[in-house]
Length: 184
Image (cartoon, rainbow, N blue to C red; front, top):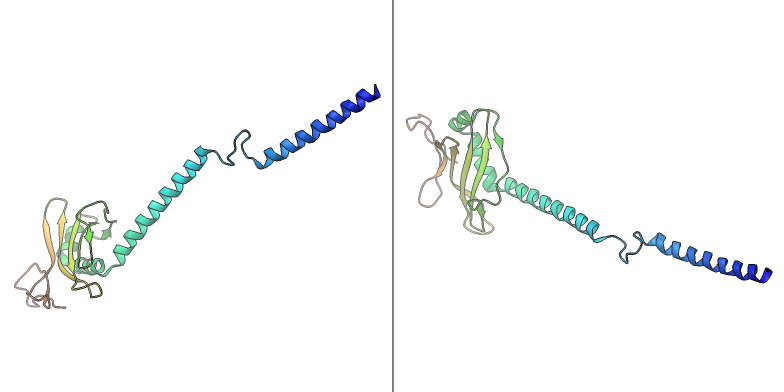
């Protein structure tokens, strides 16, 4: 009987050690029965969240890049200093994000064409901007800026005049204005 108990105890000891060994292995293995430490569904979920977050960050950085560019800033200065456009939109002037998927928003080394959504307390519309430069490291110059309100009314804000692009004029409502066109 002692031999059986001893044998049985030895077997229990062996089983207990095997159970301990198995439980230690399970402790490091998050999901029993799987060779992966994290299931595929969770990996896909985290991958999707990471991908969406990366996309949102890139979208934000592209918007920020455009809003800090000279062609964008020059157009905003023209809009903010144009009384008829300000009156048509109404205060305060709100400038919205560009629609990056719109094919009319285009920038390359020498040309920039943007359609910037703007709104105010009275109306909303799109600010169309055409800008160019002579080369990659030269300064941007506005060619044309006009505001198209949602009712279809177009307000010319700025137009480049002259063959060589040296003379620049602001669009004015009244050609008889004694101050004349503003030159830069």
